[in-house]
Length: 294
Ligand code: ATP
Picture 1 (cartoon, helix red, strand yellow):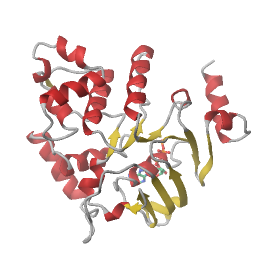
Picture 2 (spheres, rainbow, N blue to C red):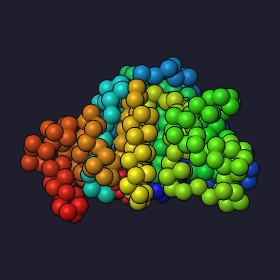
Picture 3 (cartoon, rainbow, N blue to C red):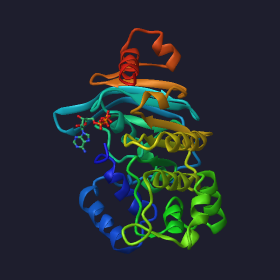
Picture 4 (cartoon, protein in one colour):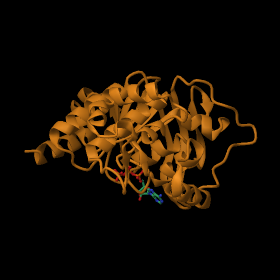
């Protein structure tokens, strides 16, 4: 899954605000090399401010010809709804989400936002309104200010500070000798996993997209950090359409809807309460996780 979203970083780097410095430029070249096939259509227009109603209609997708990952997938998500995707590894949860900002192209069918095919929009304007928070946070060598501002080029200091506050990373930044000017990355201050996650959340508050894709971390954070990050993510999801690629059932109970994906597509969907009341895939997954948790 980490590998899957690597292209996201590359694309963000180019389309949005490709970070300065050698690392950023290298990503830029890698991107040109590998993903230059996804481009604006000849009639692509700037996306208006989106509400975030999403529809997958009869979507087929394969990474390799003849090996379909999604077949005739149909799914709608209301504006502002939080939908968590669960299911076995390899079922296609990440793929479903990655198609929305066109990191990959559908083979058949279409994906629309607010009733318009995502291919109608320019990639830049589409991706400006679809934010991705990955488990594998991408930091580039630069200051904390630059790393947060990566969420939106040209943000003012006041906006950056406000985003840091909402992500509850402001105290940590204030405690650093150089504050926002502290250099992070290989030659700077090394941030913990939890701090990196918060920085990514601050970025996303700044970006303020209508649609949010959360690729839930599988790596272990301590329970307290995890709880705090969960709180910040819940706040971040407020007022946005949110798709969660979920790995731990405990964190998705509060989703408006849970979509269980298996090798045949959408196996079942409903709220946590509805799904545990049905003898299906979700209940089995839930019981299995409950058992291992003791
Ligand atoms: P996980 O829970 O392990 O993250 P997932 O449900 O998110 O899994 P996907 O990552 O969407 O599943 O993968 C769906 C299928 O597509 C898998 O068979 C996977 O091996 C394959 N796949 C994923 N990414 C690529 C890729 N970049 N190239 C080729 N095949 C891929």
